[in-house]
Image 1: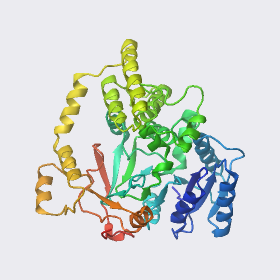
Image 2: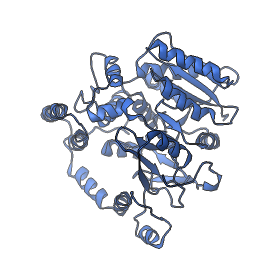
Image 3: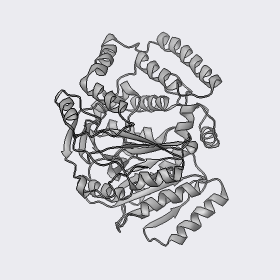
Image 4: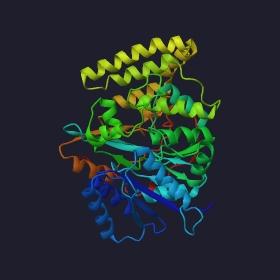
Length: 444
């Protein structure tokens, strides 16, 4: 199978952020790479600034696109994918697609490594994790993860079960965290009539991939950093804060509103978005991979999410909605949650792997050498750290924190990626940290 990569930057009224993201892409020296900036702006000044900046770069790999009229986020993403699919018959057309939103940047050298890994496995969706800069708080907090560089194959059925029980995983293939063959996108279009046109297009894409594809690959290395939290729809929804960007997103929804297929319709948080898209794929596909959600697990995860809502009045309204829909779903016959579900949850928390992860998190503020005798002993007892660990550092200057995250990622470790996020995986490639550019570490 041939390999011709396309990276798309979808953006809306965020010219400055989009140009920062674009700079991290164009640093990649690979000449076969194609780059689209897809500008969905409603602000003419922002659109003109971005168009002029792209034209001034003079990079033949870069193309600036703009739909005929502003679209909702999901329709914009669908427009991008459909355009890429439409070029499939042309000479030199892209065979693989990745998206980088305007709030993300590639770690230095990471895109080159991604392209090489995807070229070795051109038939699979290849997912990668991210580091995170919370620049909403002061001082800003940078969360970086160690990594192994290994490639692991994850079973889609097992991963669906994990998502159903946990409500979230950064390993879900959401197009903004993976390189996907356009052949996979074509299979989704054939099955669903479109690729990802839903309320949360990234989550929609992920569940559709899990329904259609028997497995996918996970590259255990953070390749991107997300930041600009104040401009994030997802973080605004989780916080219960109506920012300008989030209001713009909500105005684009139809009369059914936010997450209308979730167990508690109308809640805007990420867990509700996951459950909505899960139920949407389940209703369309009737796939045995997607059993019905149960009420006990769903409400437990939703109540946990409500603790993040910052506005007390909004939190109270959402709690009342949960109580109302609990009674209604029970009356409708939604599975309440069996003792097997509850026993499985308790057993998972007592498992050595889970305890090992909790121990790693408790040490996240200090340096830990996972090669030491202590960690080897825990490994023999089954308490393997995440793929590793994470490091949290605080920064007075968010720009300096972002520059550090891009150029000084945490070093690789030799542990096998038990990171597979509690989902059994098959090791496809052992990591080769020496070949990965940009790896290193320095104290802030």
